[in-house]
Length: 122
Length: 109
Image (cartoon, rainbow over all chains, first blue to last red; front, side):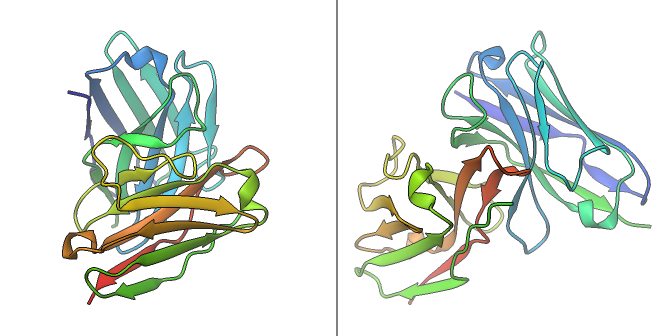
């Protein structure tokens, strides 16, 4: 079964840091670009970041550029999101998502994790 | 950056047809994907590349895309279709790359 399981969310103070993980199983992880998508409470979906299958190319939304870093460990089938200088507006459920096609970040997301909640508050 | 515009809400009676639109500048030249999200759950892909259906998605769900509007059509609406629906495109010219619409709440009367 194809599965994504996020972890690492929690409560953090403004200006703090957090690292999210997404454990993948059931597919050839290294063949797929992966993305992080977030959803603030009561709001819509917002794409955050993406990374190529090899990890050599990364992409960020302007809202997180310079503060968040996406990475992956293909030997561990795990995707990461390092979040620094966190702000109240980063409060959201963070989902990792797999595209329906290999080797492209432009495809639709056919598999989503259950999400992990990040709350930035003092 | 590229903007996708969806109506905040659509209401439909059971058994009728619901149409949810997604507007964008020349969206017909892009591939549009649609997601269904129920409360407390992760999004589920229901239509990709304008009109393809993933396995397990009922044939009642269909999509079209032309000009400045893409449309998700749900035929013979059921109570279980009540959810938020989001359109999405990839825009390589945008600083956002992956763009989601604001979402439409489908209410089954």
